[in-house]
Length: 308
Image 1 (cartoon, rainbow, N blue to C red):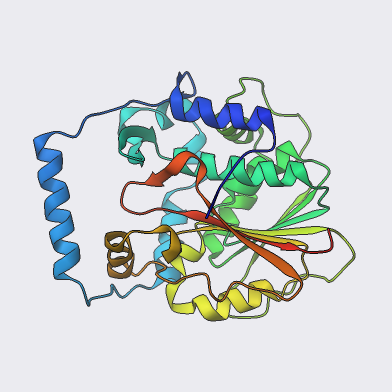
Image 2 (cartoon, rainbow, N blue to C red):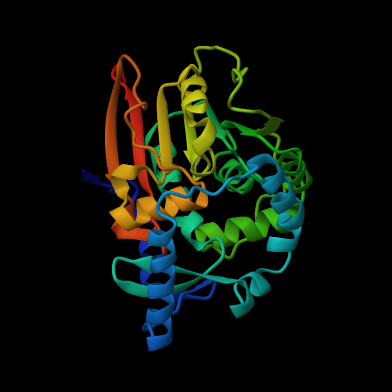
């Protein structure tokens, strides 16, 4: 399996700074696991094995309608200092090193990898399937104003959150600062290159066929689609695109314990065997520098049209 390598040196430097440094906009703190942490890990692992054959039943649509209603981007990014405060932290691991990080930190690394792919190619359109509250495209739309971005999302609250922020210059500026580590304010122009639409991946994704060069990506969206995965991946791959990128917790990237945990939670626990398309080359990449969520890993699957 390949390791992801940035083609753009600037983006690589930002990713490395996010991982290695204590930056003003990204105060990462290393930590040592205490005896209590070790005990908690043991109890957590015990629960996983005791629930070996149990898979959590989920109503993903209802669950995420509530999440995106409560986690509006106005609340999340209205105060950048508050976002980075200790009350808004999660834990992630880099290999075996402990790392304390802000809530959107893991997502910021995966988004830099997508940005790197976009910079390498001259895409006219970029589609995100499972765009959630729109945060990925609200950042990318500022970086690439010449590209048209389309977000397809299951929930009405996610689409509404995306629309609410599209012309909110303060929130857009904070999002850009957080992901790019730049202190400059965003452009004063409105984001007219973004469109968001409600879409259930079990149904055909009605995006116009054209000669425009397209990228389709998911970023921890299939993670929530275990029950509808086969229908969803079929409809995604039926899209007319030149490249597909899936940043997801596929089985190939997990250890046995991770797979059990994903199954217990009702998250994606499938392999990549259904991700193929005639005339496309398939590659699997490990997440940059082994960064992972604390309880399971994610990796990159790339399908690239052979002709370009």
